[in-house]
View 1: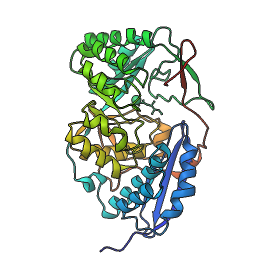
View 2: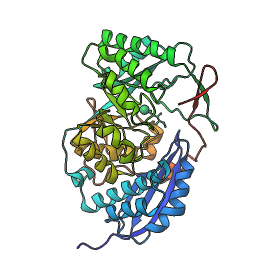
View 3: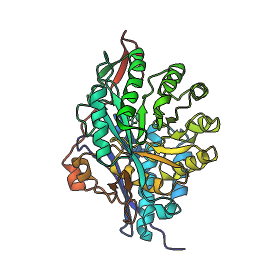
Length: 406
Ligand code: KDG
Ligand code: MG
């Protein structure tokens, strides 16, 4: 047995280069260290308290090589299982430990998972605009930049601040206010508008580019079935989060009525959120991430389970997941046999300066790089220049004032 890599210290670093990130840095007695992401958009300090109060004290002195045992200790040992705060805290530890193990062995992380299954990871970018024409111009910009797949979101007449439409076309960040900003939602107006967008995109760009769309939990199962049917002629890669997934059976209803592929899972925390959806073959893509689902250790278990029913991965990759999560996701994507696609909302230059990383974009794909570990790090001096700023995600109301799903 090689000698243990004892955990000597673990620290949480909070930084806000334009938006908040929570990072865990674990150092070992042999000088090798690893970093993990624990960011939870709008609830960052809850994960900080969980890590500092309940996780870090239990890590000191453990062998950093025991990734599985530490995962089980933190998951089973909490007694209060799952939930976004607990699972992000576990994810931060798990990412840092995989980073340490791969660095100690001098290999890129994907080598430890089973090696590469593909040359580069297909990603989709985010195009959005105030109206159909502006959105189409944005799609054109992505295609010119080499993207093979683009998510398209457009303004809806009569709806101020619809989901996914941003003033800054390059960097979308929905968490704005110290208290949640209130937005208005109209399902009838949206159901009229969405097919017009995709009809225009297919007319202008033809059949080849992959087009994706995020419904962001706004519809009932039957409304989602109507939307899926109306989008069938435009052959979407996926329709995402058509309805909230608390009631997993709702997806079976959507599935019975449309062949538009369905993606779900960016808010999932574990296999147990997805089990019925996968087993009933009600979905095509699972958007669970290393950050939301307790790290690589649990996500690869979910992916293996999903593979049995030919459900493919489509990891969440919004800007509220730090470049450390992006790096881990890319190692996972490089290995996972049932890979589908990876979301890629670019981070700002300020964020990239705080989190130097080995991954790079070329020809519609991201490449994890060959640096030992996951290849992302935190520049602590740079991080210290950006103190925490309290911000929350918006809320949504229907036009008559009723609270709705943002
Ligand atoms: O913090 C919330 C975002 O991660 C979410 O709104 C982004 O839906 C999203 C997506 O598909 O990227
Ligand atoms: Mg989404």
